[in-house]
Length: 155
Image (cartoon, rainbow, N blue to C red; front, side, top):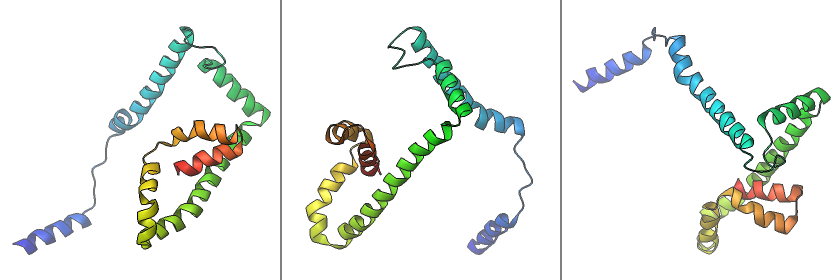
């Protein structure tokens, strides 16, 4: 009995699925929700700008951001700005990988090290990455070292 059930299950794996989800259903269930969410964010953003919740330098209008992006694209500087952020993220992650992997192996293999710094690492692990921004700004200032530190500690 059990063998027959197993064979039926294996046969089902070999069966070709002929049912295809209708395009309309895919659009409604998978494409539409993100577009609605983006639209709501833009709407709330515009309402906050219109209500003058804060200074325009701190919260520019969506149209101003779009104009700035368009100008940067036309000048050819947009990809450079994007690459700056991506390269900082990659370098910070690689630093985290280079430091974290040997440290993790050391903590996993050596009981004394695990007992000594394990609780500290667990405490740091539970701290959100964004919490490192104020101390990093105080320690390093607003520069690349601060950003690499935050990315490294977050990763």
